[in-house]
Image 1 (cartoon, rainbow, N blue to C red):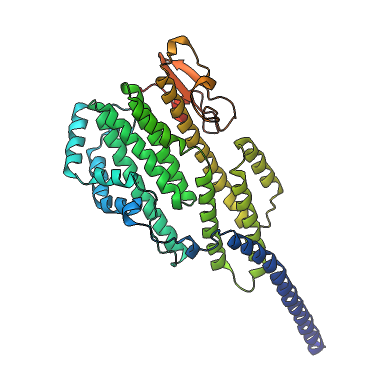
Image 2 (image 1 turned 90 degrees about the vertical axis):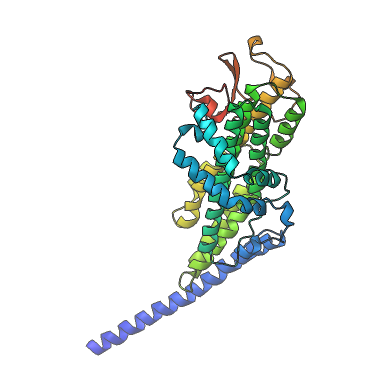
Amino acid sequence: MFSRVLRIGVLVVGVLVATYLIGNSGWIWISGSGLEAKLAALRAAGDPVSLPDLARPVPDPEQNAAILLSRARKDVGSMNKEMIALASPAYFDDEVNLTEDDCKKLASLVNAYPQVFPLLEQAGACTTYDAQLDYTASPDAVMSAVIADAADFRGVIAVLRARCRMQLAEGHHREALQTGILELRLARLYENNAVLINELVVCAARGIGVRLCNQALRAAPVPNEDRDALETEAARHDGLDGFARTLKNERAFGLSNFASLRNWLNRGYCNAEESNYLDLVQEQIDLTKAPYADFTKAMNMFKAKLSNQYPLAKMWLPAAQKTREAVEGSRGMVRCLRVLNALQRADAKPADGVPDLATLKLPNGATIDPFTEQALPVEVVDGQWLIYTVGPFYKPVEPHRWGVGPVSGK
């Protein structure tokens, strides 16, 4: 009797295993065919689908901002360490005034590294930023290199901010504005080969550049040629093409990580998960051509229709949403800066009340809040213009945080 039961049990298990193997093979074939069709379409469009695809032809070293910044990397790192050691909050907080002693220490620090700022200015005049990372390495190794590159760029942001604030404190207002514009230029170039984590660094650099330019514009009269230079650079930050490129780069990273997770037993599931991930990223790319309100509606729909069956793809969505919000916020800040620049150029007086932004000589859309699709809010505070954007980060008590307002020190 026992032997008979054992044979039946073995037979049942064998049937179940065979059924699973046949079913899994079928699932692998069906899901794999659909996935490969999507990947083939991306390849045909020239989009990267793996880490090696992110590698680009080596640009002219003298036109590659990454090369010039790398020449300054060691000194920039040393400058930041020394600024931290000086322990003055004024070096890192735009709302804290530099004292005379702070200025002396900063001047001494700048003089100790005379090659840094000429190299940063040369980098700002370049046409591209390509860190020439080794994309043939493992996904973890490449991501480590990306994070290290982002840390180096944050160091550049910090020394430029300190330099600009020192220039303002010393009365070199025109030079301070040029430093702010340089911050914006480098942020734009850095976005060339970004993934989501780099895009947040771009947004931070863009926001700091806006604040520096705002301080310089309010400190003293500005020649029209400087206003032209500011408007030209600021206009280059208005679109979402850079963010769309970032999403495509991010997709290549994601696909490489899926490849490292796949084995025969889970291949069918991974194929379906990866296919769903491709759909999500493509929808986000498509939404870069849509207003923020459409993006918000789409995000709510995504969250409602996504099941828990594909948690890896679903887990990526909040990062994409937060990054889009940060991009729109920094983009709105740039528009606020353009409005301030145009108001000053037109010699508009705050005492005359809130102006009609449609009368400013700015392109269509430049005066529109990207979050609301309405005219940017403009108020008069302490006899000066306050221009801001109203998005998910907006707080009524701190409207200047997401715009440009009167400069207050403490």
